Length: 272
Length: 315
Image 1 (cartoon, rainbow over the protein chains, first blue to last red):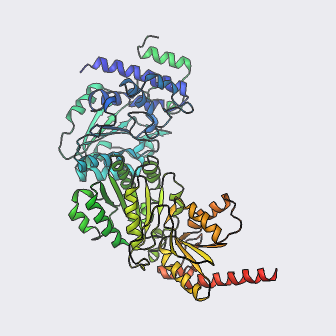
Image 2 (cartoon, rainbow over the protein chains, first blue to last red):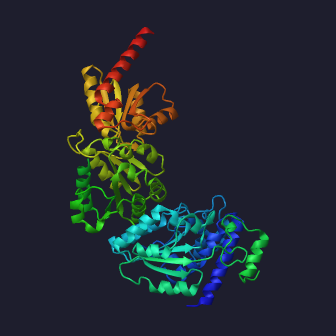
Image 3 (cartoon, each protein chain N blue to C red):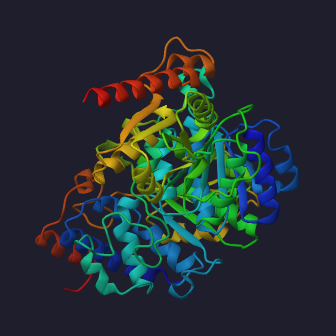
């Protein structure tokens, strides 16, 4: 695997995301940037899915349960050829097939409509169970936010999956330490998050979710324990990759200016 | 009704490998045969209805035909957002079955009553709302539900309800079923009020009021063709439902009448009032309190008919 290539790809995706936020006047930039490396790595090195197999019953599934970070998934799917990159320019415009939160089947590759938090993991369990019932082997990866873990339904799902030995299910928590209006730890008692998932019966890992080395290392281990679902607590930085956005929760809602877009491009090492 | 549901589902699941049953930790022994016959298609989802509803959506997206089953308010109000976003928004064929329609669990208190479910669920796009009137209607509608290809909600009773049909009626989703014909007034009944509707019609017949009875087992989609036909035949309609007067069958029909400018039909609605009852008691006790038994309904209708006749004579 070529880490430099992945890093370059992530930088390009980050720029696309910031540009989409600018053009589409849509918030949640910080949330999209924190999980960029995770989604880039998942599509490049884990998920068995391609544009040609988008409807195959055997495909791996990726659910972005934190639907507000959809720009990242749109940009990655476009990069992977699921649809034309030109479409990204229409993000959040009236009538666009790329809305601010994904609608059902809005573009090829978007599996589910999300936006309200705490739904993706349970839908993922349903599909992971369907794989076992129908005897079609595939994996289901669900990316959630730390704020999302406020939702009771997440913990209903966390209790259910281990009983049914869903080792084809992977939950990733993009633990960027912020939710919409404050430090996640000050709002709800999330920590110790790894121990919580472990106690619920999941094979749990804790990684730096902005390090490709660590992401790929953990992906290679799945499933380590047959019969156990996997939870990855990915420590990330909200707004990762742009100095003036990193760990600044204003970027949950702020829209970048043209100057900020240009500065971000420079910081990402992309020629203008 | 619960037993008929379990029996019929077992038969259907034997013929259709896509059927999966999800239960919210209820139905002790009810599904023993299902579990024994289809161990990999039965899931006790625990007391976690939100997760159950979303899981069902996930399964349906993969081509399975999941059924979620628990006490009505837990399977509807508790997880309404999951039904709306995951099942209806994605328009996938999950059958949500609530046991304990209306006041079936009256003595358990309002936490277990279900007099608003039709109202919530019929307002969600893509949703079909089914209210079988007895065990035969339940069996017939259950078969229809698996032939259809979208989300559906079915509210069923618990046990021991009177059986009205003599055998399996050929019901169709969205088509009201004429139980008996008449030419004086027309009763449109939904769900577990059907036996009461028949009783009311029998009593009115004795008083020379010829009464037609329609089982309006599907509240959504509303059978507007039937309503149009009925509006040509009757000028007095009565709706019966063990559901709030806000948002149920009576409301649906009133909405349709307004939109269609149906001015010549008098509509009398019987249902539950806009309150949490206190004190509570059995289903019979609360129906009595609400005037939802045959006798008070008959008396009220006779009074109104005689009043209407008197005032038309005096004109």
